[in-house]
Image 1 (cartoon, helix red, strand yellow):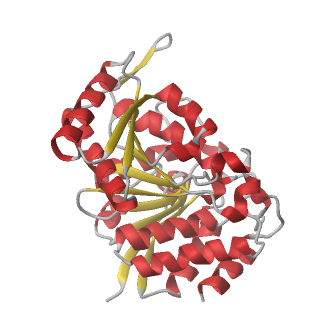
Image 2 (cartoon, rainbow, N blue to C red; image 1 turned 90 degrees about the vertical axis):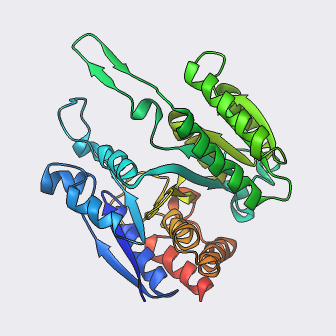
Length: 347
């Protein structure tokens, strides 16, 4: 029976990197793809970034594969007008996707593409586990001509379940698992509750895993100065958004990083970390590798197809080891050249 995947190409380079990803997936198994408008493309067609029909289709899929959303066309500071990013928030909330996983593992072939020295990033293999449906992004918002506020709120239940995700991921990743919980407990009450709940859960059920608490500003510095120090980083929504993008640059390009968003039940959402890159859309030069690696996460975490996921990952690594470089990595290979190189290594 075919695996049913809803695809959301989105905006900018989204459709350009979605098409080769589906071609890659079809070489690995039996998949049925159902495409829908999302983000800016949906705003143009329907006036909203995510329609009820698309959300319902996603709920009934085995997994959801998203390319990219956004662009200058839809940028606005008017709170009454729709923005593509609202579709992302609605999809996460509607599917109950509370855990965002972003692996960061610089490949040896790309060590010299990183803005950091080789000796600083060697051995880095970390996972950012970001809480995805709480915090300031989803808190109550007010706006007048002269005042605005965004409420940051967390419950013990929300903190407990994301901490469990992090401890579980650490157990699966390493013989010597370590979790770094990042907060701002010297200032914020939400962070003090966060630290308390994580500590109590650790003591009750995960005492065999090393746990450290690090303030977010210190964590930001350590990600640049000593990234190999980290194994699993768990943190709240906004901190995770910022830190995972910072960590992305360890690989040399944000065009290299995948992500998975998972919930307790139902399909997961898999997407590259990068944006829609409207400045290069339509030129055939977009790097599809993060999209390929997001498909690998879909195979592993969404469908339980570990060997197929490993085939994609080895295909990407083999292509890079063979000299593949897209413009963002200092080379000249276009989207189709990159796709061919990966397919050759997968096959």
